[in-house]
Amino acid sequence: MLNLNGRVAAVFGLANKRSISWGIAKKLHEAGAKLTIGYQNERMKAEALGLIEELPGAEPFQCDVSSDAEIDQTFAQMKEHYGKLDILVHSIAFAPAEDLKNDFLQTSREGFRIAHEVSVYSLIALSRGAAPLMTDGGSIITLTYFGAEKVVPHYKVMGVAKAALEATVRYLAADLGKQNIRVNAISAGPIRTLAARGIGALGDMMKHHEERSPLHRNTEQDEVGKTAVYLASDLASGVTGETIYVDSGYNIMGF
Image (spheres, rainbow, N blue to C red):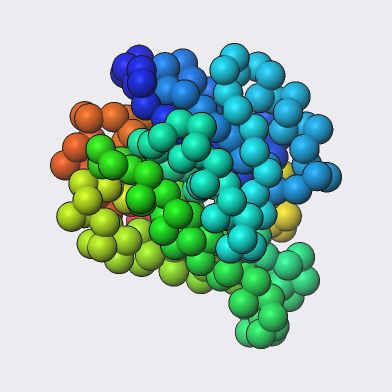
């Protein structure tokens, strides 16, 4: 395992043990990073705190990324507590259920706005808050999915939001490179997360992924976590603006 001793990592988007962010947080912790882990609101606090207890030394904080005031407060607290930040993990995505059930043509204006504000703009807002704390450079990591590039049944407006997220990664990488801050995305294969359960026919998607991917298996949380540790480390010092696939090779297949 790579050594991240002395580095401070903030992980946004922890919901439960099935969250991709949980797999990433565990691997960052194993690598020696000091962790600060965010949960969205009071409703999600109890479960988040229960998980954080399994990562000795990790600090919890509440931050609703749709609130600029809460984002500002969160990074002010991090500055006071740690003095700096080295790693930011953005594992946040949401679209209204109705806009995932209906045909994409019927996507509502409000549903489109919400999907992009929560899933995409939040990366910009968090990066803006994190950048002043990354005084020694840093690594910003977000999570995407193959539905950003190709039509995936039932993914609908989330596919469009993920496409915007991947473009945002490139533009942020261009802006922040002068501060030695790298910005990358991990495109994970389908995993049974709480968010993924909102996508129709998840079981069929995972079965197809297992059958068609070169490794003939689905992606595991820990595999995404290990790739995040690599992107957070000096081994990835020349990597920015990229989408790294952790999907058992599914994305390379034509048919």
